Length: 390
Image (tube, rainbow, N blue to C red; front, side, top):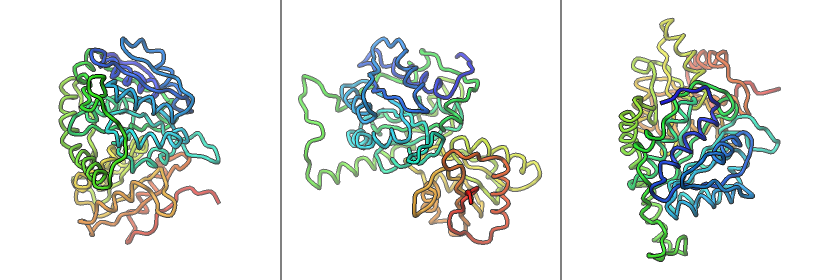
């Protein structure tokens, strides 16, 4: 395994390329490519990669990029692409189609604010707008987390107990364009970790089939129930994928939630992506001063594993959620999911904090203010907006 100083987009491109190459003894790999800031470097990396059996196809739009992935996946190829913000919005019709076709495509979402007005900085509203599509969703805090999660996502999505596509999110610019030292996997390791893709409903000349034809209501109901059962299989499949990852690569990525200092915590913060790293710094410092505070890193958003979340927060009585996203008329999207998870814990005071929307800085000072507010708070209120301009 090589160590290198690379950007997040370089790391994502490397992981996707090696995963695609690992399918060279089967139907190879293929993806559609359309540029948009801040994900373009991923596509550039993939276009330059010398695949043994594979091709990255430039197209005229994000909608077509996902259409290429759908066709390639139905043909048995390992398929992937990347996009951001309004590109993801334009891709939406085919994002839903890929999930309903049960195709294990990987989509890297480099989180960027949806416009107008146009804003190229990070906001998770673009990927979370797809939360009702039949896709797994992972959120990554670092370059290493990104590389490892992409490989895990392929392993989980291609498992016949799941057979669903997966979205892997990274913060635009904060992660995509900064450089960190990363342990990069070798091709031989990825070959061992990712078996050749065997899609049960792969199209072939020998077995004629129609894909996506008209169905009756009862058939659709059964189809949606099968997708729900596939989502319910994810925890077991993910655990097995992490076990195998540790055997092959010698380290274990985080699962759905990672709890830190929560064994005796009275107050717990919940965060995802790069917000985790800032929150961890503040929580660690307060622990050293004797404060009973903890942190939960939320990595797997779909499916949202409610029982695992309750275990992660331990016996904490106050929980603050850091949301770099906003559902108009409701509040933070992670907060909404967590609120439904706490039906069995009416003793928990749950407060939402909207932070860093549109790419605004979230500093240790902001986290300190949030913890101070949560510490003295006696009851929850509507989501609190931090640093809103007058």
